Image (tube, rainbow, N blue to C red; front, top):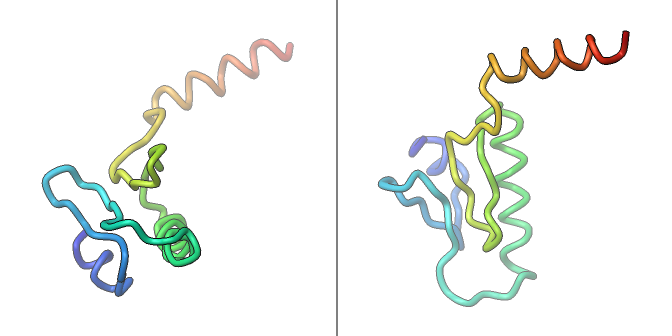
Length: 83
């Protein structure tokens, strides 16, 4: 994960190894933070890396709302209810 974060050359966001999160330091204007935030989320999505955006715009890695088995069960239930 560190290699990916380093390759983005981020100015405002910092990586926390212990919590596996990206957070921004300081009190910068959203004018500066938003472009970097979109850059990060676009890159993570294109690499198919699971993440979650928290309320304070912190990005948490390794997050998947549903496991593969849970997704499959949900899919089967949807098919059964349509019949």
